[in-house]
Each structure stands twice: as C-alpha cells, then as structure tokens.
Image (tube, rainbow, N blue to C red; front, side, top):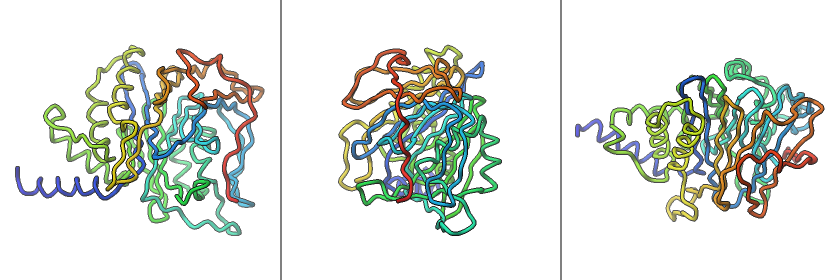
Amino acid sequence: MKKFPLILFSLILSIGLWNPSEACTRVVYKGPQNTVITARSMDWRDEIPANLWVLPKGIDRNGLVGPKSVKWTAKYGSLISSSWDIASADGMNEKGLVANLLWLGESQYPKFDGKGSKKGIAISLWAQYYLDNFAIVKEAVEFSRKEPFVIVSDYIPGTERFTTVHLSISDASGDNAVFEYIDGKLVIHHDPSYTVMTNSPVFEEQLALNNYWKGIPGTVMLPGTNRAADRFVRASYYINAIPQTADTRTAVASVFSVIRNCSVPYGITSATEPNISSTRWRSVSDQKNLVYYFETVFTPNTFWVDLKDFDLSPKGKVMKLDLSNNRTYNGKSNAEFKESAPFTFLGLK
C-alpha cells in the first residue's frame, strides 16, 4: 500500500478511537417504484424507555424555553418513538417525512438569551417540530436556513450528561438532510445521497471517511468494530449492496438486515471507550406505504403500525402503545394502541 493511503488510514482509525459516542446508526434505502425506507438503531449505555405515540394534527405546542418560545400548531399527524416520555427521538409523519435524533458529542448550541430577540425550542421538541410542520426535506431546509429559532439544550434528567444530538430527516422522495450545531452555529447538509449517518465524527468528516472506503471493495474488507466510523462504512456499503426491489416484504427485510448488522450486541462495554453502547431498539419506516416497524432487544417479535389507519385529523385522539415491562406485540399492532393523555415534553426548568 502506498504511503499516503497508510497515513489516511491511520487518521481514520484515530477518529474512530478518540471520539467515543452513543452508538446509534441511521440509513436510508431507495429502491424502484418510489420505495423509500429509513431505518435507525437506538443505542444507549443505560435503559432508555420508549413508547410509541400517535399524535394527530391540530395540536398546539410551544418551545418550552420561556417567553421567547416558538409557538406552532401541528400541520401533520405523526407516529413517534419517545425517550422516557419526555422527547420525540424518532418518527414519521403522514406525508412520509421521517426524523431521527442521534447523539453527537461534538455538538455546541448557541447561547440562548431568554430576554433576547431570538426565539428558541427545547431540544426535546426538535424532531417533533419538523414532523409537525414539513412534508418534504426541501421546504424544511429552506425554512431552517433562515435560522428563525435556536435549539436550547439541557442536561438529561437525573444525570450529569448534557444533551448533544444532531437531527436527520428524509422524505418519501428519498431526499435527505442533516442538521448539526457546530461551534454554536447551525450547519445543514442537504443532498439525496446523504443516506447514512452515525455519531462522531461530525457529518462532514463522515462523508470524507465514506469517500475513502469507496475505493476499497466491501467484499474484500469492511471495518468491523462498534465505533461510529466503522458502522458508518458498513451501513454505506450494505445499503447499496442489498437487492433493489419494489417488493415491500423483501425491501423491509433487507433494510432490517442492514441496521442489525450495524447494531451493537446487547451487553457490550468497553473500558477504554465507555460510551460505546448496546442497541436497545430499532425502527424501520416505510415512507411509501406509511408503515412503521419496531423491535426491541428484550422482546422476540418485530411488529408494525400502519399510520394510514389512524384518525390524524384535528378530531383524532392521542394514542399510545405501551412498551414498558417488555410488553410483546406481534404483526400489525394498531389495535393495541390506547387513547391517552399526551406526554409532556421536557423544557427548561
């Protein structure tokens, strides 16, 4: 191997070694006949209880950061996965827009002045804002470039861990965007080709890693560790290697195979990289058919929810699928949702 690739390879390994992070992965599959499917894993060091919620349009919300909070009314209904029932971590709206929050240790948000001119939104509502307000990625990006508000973060309740995440969105056409706050400034990456995202490093460096590995055949060598950089490479290779098909059963099965390949086995820990974390749950969003698939590591079945079968009008009810105590569901699980009072998003104290 030539000297320059050896140096670059060493840099790639160092990025993977010195940037430990919560180990989520997100990947988008684009097949024939408008088949678009987004998958993600939720990897976390500790328990991170999730429930599924159906949220109809017409709900009034505000950013929960005080008098300068952004206020809005949901234009679209959505199905989301919550974290601790205080935040939307993942979900899909009735137009097929998918939002995924993943950890990014390098995130630095602007300083928020509750008495200043800039409005804000609590980080717990970041993904929900996009699901509530946008049908396609392009309009979300055009809106966000104006920076009408800032994201306001805080510590995870009961911990000393400050919340640092980045947001990816994809739509039913296969368009993609990634939103990050780096050095206090919003950075937007927008291109249909941005189908894979992990944690560290920042997305710009993830793209550089991907360009390097494109020159190495995946059938010859793929990095196999749990580090974010290695998972990014495997996801990028496999999402393009699986069959291109419009058959939903085959496509969903293939995408699940990819996201499982990029997951971290349950119970894995690392003394030198304490933030490498076990996969807790996985979701797969079929954006063409508006079906949301879900599985957890402690239950034996993959189940799914058809968003089209819910009343998402302003007269619709908030519905909850309780996943606590390792409740097990099988197949289509719409009927298992129960009407519920909406959970309360976490705002500034």
